Image 1 (cartoon, one colour):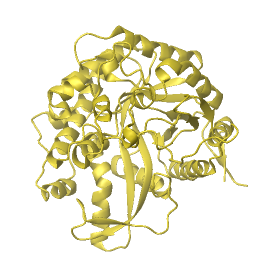
Image 2 (cartoon, rainbow, N blue to C red):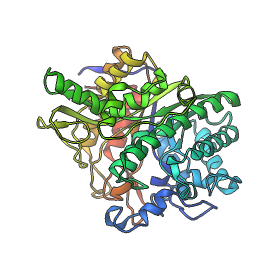
Image 3 (cartoon, helix red, strand yellow):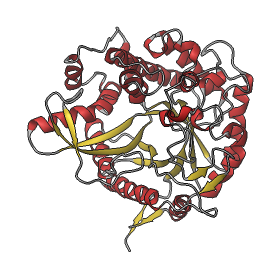
Length: 447
């Protein structure tokens, strides 16, 4: 049986997000986030679920870290709840919230686990949303101040930082598609938010450099891949627009100091345009130490006149699908990573999220999830393929460590390596947990 070897210093990890696992929504001085508001609004989240308790990791973080250690993870990617630090988004630091993250980080370090911190995983303080949220340029300054506070508080403890997780979701999914908080449906608003996120990212990177704290900083866009159904130019262009919505729109400003013209034209056809002020692009174009990549799915695609924002229809060639009904398209991970390398150069990459939704509960204390193991295995194989072709991948974070609050789908969808009974909060490692543990321990993959 062939063996696929990974580098000895490869950072194996798993990822979570604050609102999805912490709970304790009104404890320890924490302020309201937009997700508290959204989830408490009837009809927004499946079954009326909310993140009030989630996995209760705020109280059970030591138990979760024990599982992280058992799994053999070298890195744990988590996010900080902005309203736990600044309940109103600005003002005085909430010491109880800061102390919680110090306890978490200290416990990780005591167990030899590298903290990998995301500053923003969607939980904007509601007080800032009341002033316009990310549509208001003032939110940029509030975010930079929050980030700088965290850099200084954890200098020497946290050495891997990401500014934003999935800016496409924060902007287009939350403000154009409208099924994430705050739930707006306006393309111009989405473009404004996306631009402000990019400025906030760039200014935060500048602040990180000026602060002189040790470590590295990047950010983590979510990407997918549309492979043209044919060599017809219209198919190629339509797939390029769909991929470019997540890739070029959020990476060209970072690496080239400009927005891609082909995407700007597509938005202009819908009557929307990015509003650039003097100095914006210089602020955005800051060198990053690494690029986080979140990848889940992709497909074949072809041009179809009048079909959606980018006149594209997906072609299903009989894909296996996850319980989220996402096509399993592991070769898309290889293709998008090679595309990024060819367009922007050999930027160090971490896979900051990759995983699959498969539902189910333990039977007699055990949960076989062979489909999840198969998904992870296929994607790790394509990841190593990209590495062989020169993509400098430094680490891989499985999504997710725990079953958790899956945003608008509530508790109906399970991505975790560890099953969580949301009635009792009992944790049960799945078969995929033990498979991943073996991969990490060996440093190689059997195929």
